[in-house]
Amino acid sequence: MSHDHEPHEFVLTDVLESRWSPRAFDREEVLDEKRLGPAFEAARWSPSSGNSQPWSFVVGFRGDEVFTTIVATMASGNQVWAEHAAVVVANIASVVDAEGNPQSHAIYDLGQAVAHFTVQATAEGLMVHQMSGFDAQALGRELGIESSQRVVTLMAVGSLGDPADLPEKLQEREAKPRVRKGLSEIVGGSAHYA
Ligand SMILES: Cc1cc2nc3c(=O)[nH]c(=O)nc-3n(C[C@H](O)[C@H](O)[C@H](O)COP(=O)(O)O)c2cc1C
View 1 (tube, rainbow, N blue to C red):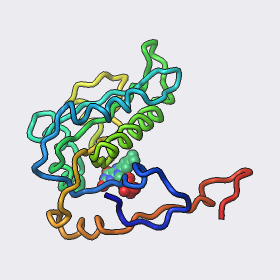
View 2 (cartoon, rainbow, N blue to C red):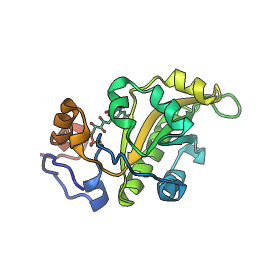
View 3 (cartoon, protein in one colour):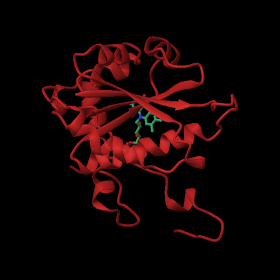
View 4 (tube, rainbow, N blue to C red):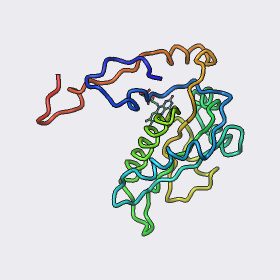
């Protein structure tokens, strides 16, 4: 389902047109590895510097221990809606390589893998809402990740729910049209957009 937004300057492919980040997730939905598989496959096949693939993902299904651990580290403003999603995921970057050298591109590569996940998930009829509002150090400790790794972001994943279930303030935010800077503000050099 597409969300209200400012007019696009150019037409997007359907899956990008329909992607947005909801807070209202289906509270009854149960997802499994098979349903999430295509999205993780897309992340797996995303490009990375030197094919280093410096990403990993820790998945929690609503009600299980991993889910509870991840949700507990979220900022309360995220907890209030994300705890109802069928799935939460911790997105982890390997910021130091096997030789102990910093992988300066790791966060960029992880972001790209998450973008691919998001697009494929949308094509599968799922919605994804990424978050940086959480205690990354606490979650890293809880999950027992290596010192060479960093939890960079979280994702809530599931089908769209009923916005009426959200607290009033979030209902307002949920209904707001999506906005963006114009192309002329973000693209320069020899390319000129109105
Ligand atoms: C790295 C990153 C961190 C984000 N952190 C949060 C967050 O903590 N809480 C939240 O509600 N949304 C968060 N978002 C979602 C953005 O607010 C959202 O993508 C942006 O407003 C654009 O809306 P759209 O995804 O619907 O196009 C985050 C998105 C990204 C990519």
